[in-house]
Amino acid sequence: MHDIPDFAINRRTLPDGTELAFVREGAGGVPLLMLHGWPSTKRIFYRNIGPLAQAGFDVIAPDASGWGDSPLSPHGYPDPVRSVHQFIDLMTLLGHERWVLAAYDFGSFSALDMVNRFPERVIRQLIWNPMVPFLPDIYEQAGCGGDLMKENLSLSSHITDHGADPDGFAGRLADDEARRAYVRGFYQGRVWRDGGPVLRLAAEGSFDDEAADFHAEPFGDAESFRASINYYAALLQPELLYAPPLIAQRVGTETMFLYGEADQIIGRIVTRRAEVAYDRIVGPFIVEGGGHFLSWERPGIVNGALISLCRDLLKGGRP
Image (cartoon, rainbow, N blue to C red; front, side, top):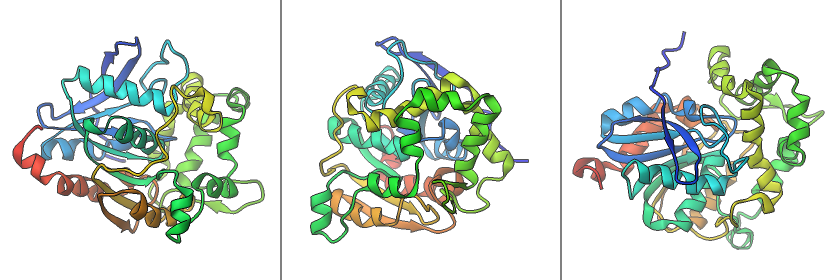
């Protein structure tokens, strides 16, 4: 059996009426906002929260609106840009003006928008297997050309499955167990396109049945599942976004970049692109024995990276 912590779930209602659920440990420490991706919730950070709080961080790990323990906002289905504003409001309610970010996958989409839209709020960030800035011409000139979206679409149909008709796709998963079984495949390996091979996001063996069930369980709920795939709808239909995303510019925020080498969907080419797109980059560092979900697969690496990146802040206390 896994020794999975049982954290208290906190809730706050934001000025826009949205309620966010979150775990918070280490109040009074260096503020750290951890942003999950798909198909994950704040649970993907359950191997990080305790050790990082002990190291001196005030760790805040929310569920995005409509995901996990967060109910659907009165504003409707979430998108990764509206989530940025909601996370800002949450951190402000908790008494923080500036913080450290940690993110991956769709969390890194929100992180990218946040550091560009509100650079004064983010001290520095750790990202892994992320969405990097959309700078195709600059990447081409640097010899690492390509488009991450097109690369993913060539390997997998899940982006269009989720985003083109989210209501129809969600409706085809008949019950709680069908939704959970679908999500488990993203942790344990799946056929990403009809007729294709089994490919993995995570290193083989990183998620046994118990771990995969733990992370898939929140997506059994029909409303939560539908809300979560709205991120994909917004990706394909930009008019659904709360505001035009700020994802097509270089990043000036100090950024430590990790890449879990077992990820067979997001290719290692993102490390080359990161060297071009992030002006103050630490790394990139290749992590063996882990893939897309490094915070769960290699928690000691992620925890140590954050402690190292923020050792001056931890020594001096809250910024």
